[in-house]
Each structure stands twice: as structure tokens, then as C-alpha cells.
Length: 140
Ligand SMILES: [Zn+2]
Image (cartoon, helix red, strand yellow):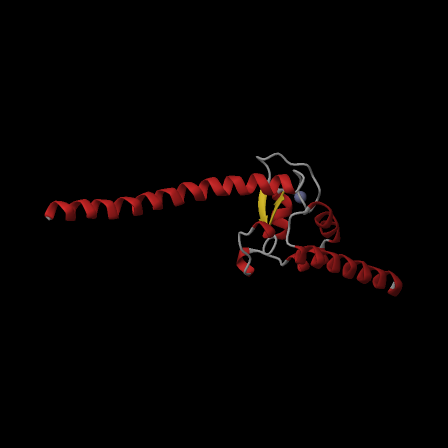
């Protein structure tokens, strides 16, 4: 009786420990995997300036920043160079693209696997920025 209890106790504990370990290993594996996939989907470039990148100098950028409610879903991830990643900071994609229409244009070209709402937003932001600069040119 007591032997069976010990046995059951041991069985109950070990899978839980294993699961925790496996989760951690999976998380690490997943992160590397996600980066490689994202990098490949983005044509091994920075999606904002279009510069070719290596896996070492590529950074993962959250299109909708984590601080603004974004998540780690593949549709929210792109590869970017350090400079663009810092330039974008915690701006919403729309805010970033209105300020830097070139980034929006490259984003539409290179961020193929990103959620289509972001691409739609980029198109809107770029045309908004173009309209604004056309107005400014007319006013001048
Ligand atoms: Zn860049």
C-alpha cells in the first residue's frame, strides 16, 4: 500500500518536471526557428530599408510593438536591421510609415509573410505621406 503510494507520487512528479524542461527547450528552439523562418520570409533583408542582412546582424522586429499590444505571432514579425529597429522604436507601423514613407514602400515589397492588415496600413500610410508632401509642394 505505502509502496504504491510512493510509486504514484514519483509518477505524478516526473512528467510535470519534464514538461517544464521541455517547454523551456521548446521556447528556445522556437525562438531560433521563428527568427530563421521570419528572416527567410523577408527575403533575408531589412523590410524597412531593404538592406541585405545576415542572420547575425538581423533583428526581429514586432510590427505592432509589444508595448502597444502586439504579440509574437509570425504575422507580427519581420526581420530588420538594428538601425531601422531603433528608428522605429515603439511607434505604431502607421506612425512610422507616415514619417518614413520609404520604409513603408520597402515594407510592402519585402514583408511578404506579415499580416495583411499591416500591408494595407502601410499602403495607406505611404499614400497619405505622398498626399501630404504633394500638398506641401502646392502650398510652397
Ligand atoms: Zn533597415
